[in-house]
Amino acid sequence: MRSSRFPRCDPEARAESFRSVRVIRAAWAALLGAVMVLTAAAFDTASLYLPGVGVLLLALGAALWVGLAAHGLAVEREPGPHSVQEEEPYPVRLELRPGLLPPPAAELHDPLLAHPVALGGRAPSRMRIDVRFGRRGRRRFEPGVLVVHDPLRLAVREVAVAGGNDEVLVLPRIEPVVAGAAGGAGGAGAAPDAGGDRVGLRGRVDGSAAELDLDGLRPYRLGTPASRIHWPAVARSGEMLERRLTSDADSAPLVVLDSARPESEEALDKAVRAAASLCLHLARRGGCALLLPGDRRPTAVGTDLGTWPMLHARLALVEAGSRPPLPARTRRAGAVMWVSASGLSPRDLPRSAAGGSWLVTAQPRQGARTDFTVAGCAGYRLGRGARTAGPAAEARAAG
Image (tube, rainbow, N blue to C red):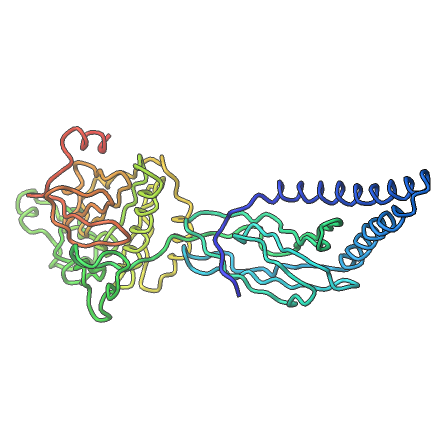
């Protein structure tokens, strides 16, 4: 089993060079032998017969051996998983079926391999290579090639690698959420406790607490309990009105991903990893919602994680320059975590979340206290007493 990183080769340029080597070297070797034999016959030089015939037979023998070894030779790449997380091993399994003769020498060139793999006459019939992808996104696979040649490379034959997936979706890596500035993302012992929440942002919403969140008044509906009737409004207006209470979905934490104007590709990747990690962290603790660039409404993620695979795949394809989603005009009862690739947040964000708001970014904020860290980003509480990026930066973010 081998390990490799993707990608480090140009298969088209390599195949073109193999074709040139096959044509030029084999032809020149045969031509050299023929010229030596003709020269020996023309000038009656017996000493040139032996090397001339030897070079000619060498070229013909190499071409015959390589041709018979490549005849019937096949290489198949078995289909692998359609998605994999960043830095996780992606298994590439190859099956080799030999030709009429064992190849004198062979090299396997594949875009998934960092270096060609040399194969001799006793090459294994099955191979496994672990490939790791450093960045999220969709990766397309170019076809590989098995090059069969003699030791002197006078004759070269190419056998295309068949089968396998055409592409794989690399998902953003999930990293633990750590309370406070210590520990760092991905550090040892950073995983949350099984029975608690080290960050303090619980997704579970207590039903009794949700009933206390008043979201306005609306006309009385038949069957509404008397405890929901707003009697002071009834006394003032003479009209039956009831309290409109926030729903559980509005009380759940909301994770918002802002991919606009990132400082670098690495900053955008960190923001995507942080949003994915926070969403999964909160979903496992009672549920949350995720708002992605371009969406008008957030998508709920429950404890069963039914919608998580779809959201995880969409996070892998987030690109820079998307319009940042704006906070809801109505006041949310739950917490809002604004994950920003640029380090900026809307000016009115603290007023839109009754449960508190956080800016999660890889850009450090001078003088602000770090509440938690995740995937190379830090979470800063917004609101009264929290430092901002300045009126000009806030105006740009709000616009």
